[in-house]
Length: 254
Image (cartoon, rainbow, N blue to C red; front, side):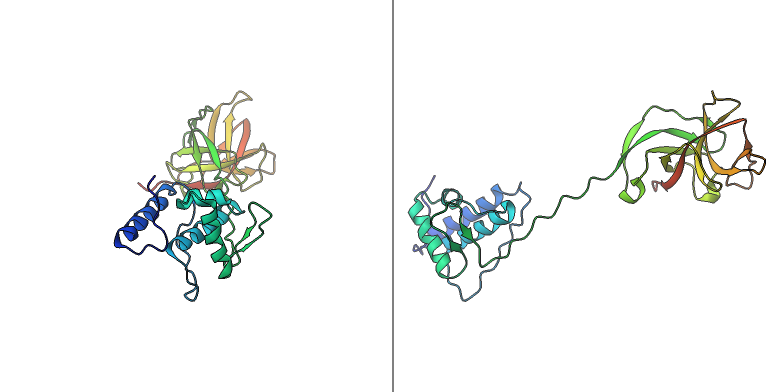
């Protein structure tokens, strides 16, 4: 490693070397999610280029770790092999009021000239729901229970939901559920009148045909599955097994 230019050096060559070195330091740290924007030092505080470099490193390190670096870490960062030289620069930063040190402790550097930026908590992971198959909202057709895919959905749609189904048909168009839409379903085995449900319908408990309809319980106890399309007739089946309530819908714009 080439020796760093001394802060006292003012030759054009040294200035170029220091400029290149600072660019390389920033580049080497781009994989870390840190704010590398330079924080301005008040104009009335005179710092050399090396002291400015150390000050920026202290800010970045404390913001990222929550505690200050050691003298050795500072020296490795800015290319100073001598701990006494690092101490001399830290003494100057303390003299101008940017830091406060406790010489009896290895990491006791308080940044009095900077308020720490608290790390933001990681954003909550978006819900991922299984896509179980295609549902015939018209005919009805068999819904494949095997998971075709796992889909990330917006948090507002995924909250409390259990699975997704893709709709095929136009029997629910007046409820805003179109052919090709993906419905978000909350798993439940019962429903109230007016709920849009996914249900298995047939002659007995072996029913395996799934449909999406509006659920109605008639006064005589029968269940009516009502399409939301004036051109279609309601479904009355001997056996209806509610799989879940539709709580959301989203579509791709083609």
